[in-house]
Length: 106
Image (cartoon, rainbow, N blue to C red; front, side, top):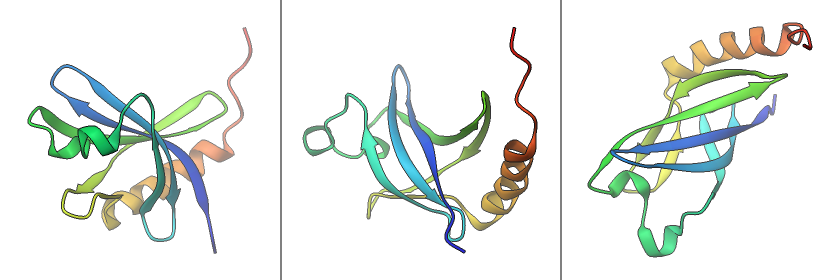
């Protein structure tokens, strides 16, 4: 089963955040196709290598609802991923997210 979901990835720094869009492979936990918003990776380097880097998280959204999860960054390879245990929990939360009725319109 090939289930690729669009996500938002946020690298938290002490005073700023670096946002990116990406694709999460729900089978492997790999995060691919990161596209940073207003951040020059070539010039500034991987956000996780910055001195004021704190953590990285991801957000999966559907019908106005969000599920947030922890993202691991391998600073040596520059790869982003979700751990096996986090991925298992995320799959359950994502199933609920995608099967719930949308919130009522106001």
